[in-house]
Length: 224
Image (tube, rainbow, N blue to C red; front, side, top):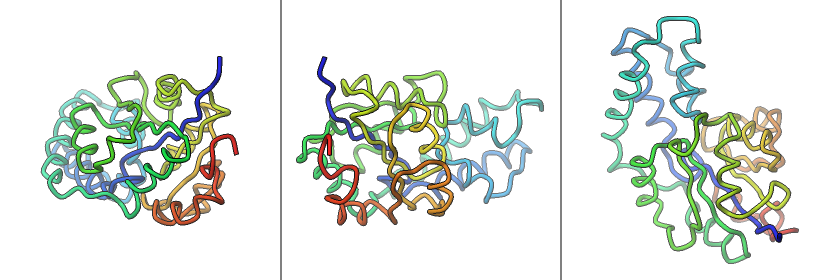
């Protein structure tokens, strides 16, 4: 069976400027339930889904009975920012440029379905998006490879004919575990050295810089 070339995109921090909004929401939600975590640590965990993030921040051995309530508090706090969410520079244009080159464009997000719908409206690029995945599609989110594998399946692609674009070491790790080459952008706040250390094949400042150099990147042309 022929594999379809697929460009897989993380959403938060890669296509939309939401990382620090999530950071504030997690910081406040944890504080409300007497689980204070410095904002810097919250930021470094953004990019994981809630299932992985709370394990990472709180450990697996402590009192975790409030996890569902903390997650719900984060979701409510983050929802206050929804009207202010905006795409990062060049994000929608990058998706359209990839589609024009023959890539199937797939969103592979750790967000839930309701939140993802808000993000898609803000991005305003549904005309070129072939498929989407969300946290509701898997039992383990990034850095587990499950979301990447589901995205590949929905695109009808295999790892050798796909490229993943993300902004965190969790994205790079998830792509690597799924056998997919990863392009990283620094708009989530991770340094180039960290992203390359996690296995990123390319690092760009943001989607605008990636778009400007698209012909020289892994996304220059399918199979290229």
